[in-house]
Length: 555
Image 1 (cartoon, rainbow, N blue to C red):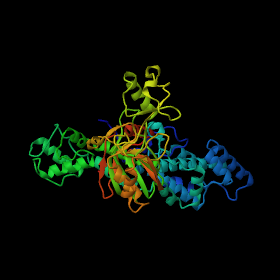
Image 2 (image 1 turned 90 degrees about the horizontal axis):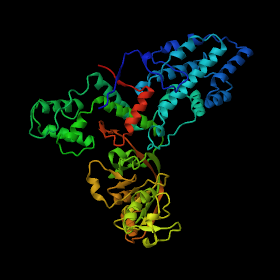
Image 3 (image 1 turned 45 degrees about the vertical axis):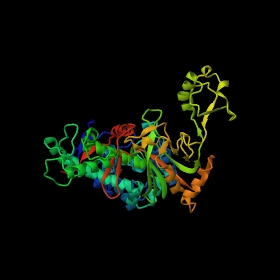
Image 4 (image 1 turned 120 degrees about the vertical axis):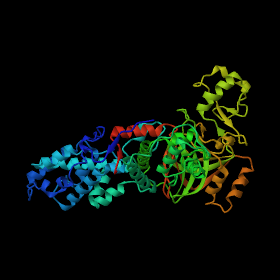
């Protein structure tokens, strides 16, 4: 079990770690807004300003901004005019809004900002050159905060090679330009993700911080299994913990009664476990997860929401890898859901995370065996027995079928094997009877499978990376319903030919392969899933290195 140190409200904020060297200018959350944003700090600039003084200010801004292409471009475009560090009402409003947002950064799941250097710079303004340096310091702070709160504090691809998501980073010049033209408070609020999930995650974060301040969920449940009819100290501890977590109404029962069975069953449903109402080893391990770990999962989910701060589409496909489900979403409402099988946990088989657009489906598909599977799995089999995997065709570079008798498999290595392999359409085809394509360089798609028994497993990580669907036909009907009045008849007419048929989607559908271990429910409450690939643990470690902390608030 991981240990997470807590940051409690009321500690000296100046003790917070710096932000991993990412900021040339730091800003402490303990700084008084009045001391920094009031006119008294910045009234040193005389009026009218002489041409020589303006030149000194311009020169100072240009020098301070030189290390940033965005800042250089912005100030060149506005004639090196201050937008933060002058005595105008608009500049004062910008300072107040920015400093307030920075002070509240930990409430948004961000690392605290240290104000020490900027405070000193602002209080030491004695010349136009000082004013220019303070101006750029504020602008740097704004760009850092804007990027952090809008698109995340981390670069996903640097955390795990399977997170290949393209983050929608905004152009710094346009962000700063638009801020200077807008209501500053409203603009800063609008930087944050607008998704309902983000807002619900922030509320749950605040709730769990209160739970920590109140001492958590109580004693861990001992033992390995509890079920209906049992009684004793372990059952009482289980009862108390379920009540503290909100799964069991107030109760004085000392036995594992029907109410406790229902509470355990609800807990199991909310955590992706088989809902049998029995508190076995797997269920108890999840019941005993401390609130600190759940809060860490929330903070990771908030960061992940920022990576996807873009329009996901009124209709889109949402595949949560940790949940082993694929959903069709219409206006944020689930209109179709099916179980899925995802990539196995071996490093070279894990399903990646990215977004793309589904363009077409293939009915009665041919399986073009990926090169990696051909040479790593099938070539060794055929070297031992040339007739192995007889359901697969071997083809040359021109697509012509090559008889196995004409191939000396022992003469080739994985790097020299010159042939490809294909499986013709059939009921036993590895892709089943339909695949759903969103062409991408990772060769990932959704598809049917003849291996139906795997969908009955609680954990469903078995594939080579693609996503298998339990109900692919119904999935197809839901997609086709927008372009034909008889989607089932349309689909089956093509299926019954036995021939490979491509069906274009008249409207492409965004597909999002995501990895969420903390999932909010629209009507309140949370669901949690296990970190099967270990990606969230890596993200949490990186967030801690940035300075993100668990906090106990209240109490």
